[in-house]
Length: 90
Figure (cartoon, rainbow, N blue to C red):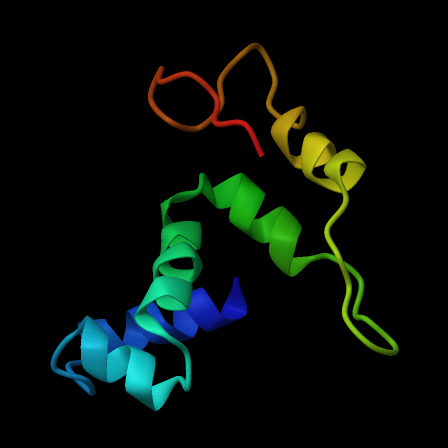
């Protein structure tokens, strides 16, 4: 999520000219860049929940369904922060 926000900032400030340059600069393939950038499309409360996950002490941390389900169920009264669109499945 933090990488997606960083990439978005580089694009907004015109540090990079296009998404291909962004992929090269970030040392990721174009195919990997797409899901990273799609994180910016998540509702803000879900983005915040992802950024608030505990730091990994060793190796990689795999987001488990139970964790992502908490993000999804945190909305109250059926409002998912997407302007009435159905909730996306994580």
